[in-house]
Image (tube, rainbow, N blue to C red):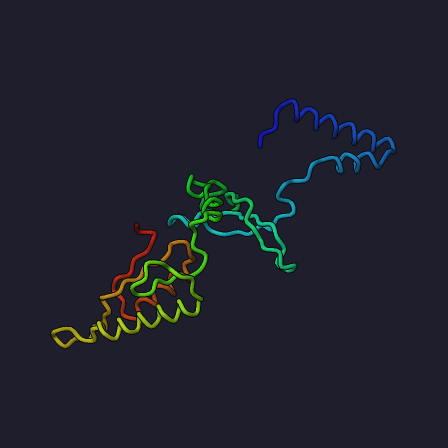
Amino acid sequence: MGITRRQFMRVSAAGLAASTVGALGFGDAGDALAAGVRPFKLERATETRNACPYCAVSCGVLIYSLGDRSKNARSEVIHVEGDPDHPVNRGTLCPRGAAVLDFVRSPNRLKYPMHRKAGSDKFERVSWDFAMDRIARLMKDDRDKNFVAKNRDGVTVNRWVSTGFFGTSSQSNEAGYLTYKLARATGILGLENQARI
């Protein structure tokens, strides 16, 4: 929202008048002026710092939400902007980053795990426990079936080549290191990262 020259002059004149009246002994004039100023729309919002989820740059974003979880009021994101204190983007956002609010509010966004049973034509909502257990079970079964302990020459290689791992780039160095170590500990050779795509 921009301010015009005329608006600036009005606010400056009102501030000068209020401070002059206050200096003459009318102390409540400044309070009356402050009460007449419209509050900033994000004043009541909760500010959360995060990283943009779209690409490998990981620009900093400020997410503003309204709602009080302590009173069981559902929190809702109302505004997203670039973080001026972030060393990567210094408050600027690309068009995709500027549209993060649309991503958050999209009716097509998945908010919970979905599972399609064999032979079914639709996805059904499942619990996080079910999803994690199923992923772990499928990975274990595939690893047991396709794990290569030794190559043709009898050299120990400990490879699992039938499964790949795709990591995110919007994470810290420490989280990236742990992701790499987890994938390599299982024997996965196909390790890719969003930052390289």
